[in-house]
Amino acid sequence: MEDTTLSLILFSGTDDKLGAAAILATGAAAMGRPVNLFLQYWALDAFRRSKIAADHGVAAEAGAYGASLVKQGQAGERHWSELLRQAKDIGDVRIHACALSMELFGIDKGDLDPLVDDVEGVAAFMNDATAGPIAFI
Amino acid sequence: MTITELAPTKTIDARGMACPGPLLNLIGAIRQGQVGDIIEVISGDAGSKTDIPAWVAKAKHEMVKIVEEPTFARFIVRKAR
Image (cartoon, rainbow over all chains, first blue to last red; front, side):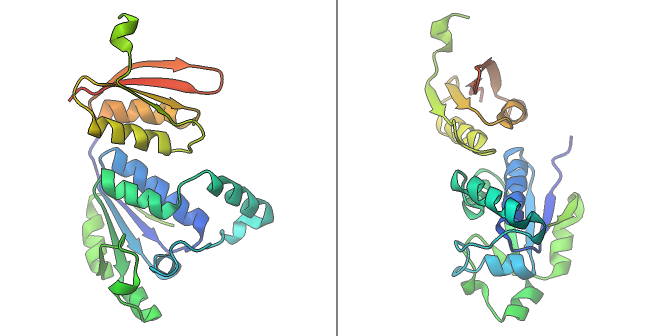
């Protein structure tokens, strides 16, 4: 099979969704597929240097039971930011911040964790995403 | 193959580590190792049973053996290149 690029648009900023996205990205990177991540809205907010290690909660559908499960699970797991660092270490993983969301928050590249490679417009992201599937998380 | 030939160069005990941790540890050990090294990964993670053989085949190393134990499995991998 072709090693097509996996493109993920990260929109949600909760730890469960970011964790799921980090696992998908790491799996693709381990299997030699290029990974192209685009951070929008609340996901971008979670990648701020000042916030990345904070508790970002879980998605509303988790409910109280789900939230406690995720918390228990996180105790034995690597944080999603650490997983993404490892994914970048073992493979070709590029993390782009959406230029429009950057404007919304009034932040610049220096406000973001160094995991983020650059700030990019949506057309540039789509240009990199032509070689494979896109998922929105 | 004798026991001596299977003696691991390095053993990684990844029990208690969640998916994809054991695989990441294997990748790290293979990268640091020499061609011909035998790496043993001990993992209780269910994902390892599919992920480690898939990665080993994709990365063109050799899946020497998988030893199933009641609560974990031992994955014996030879660095082939």
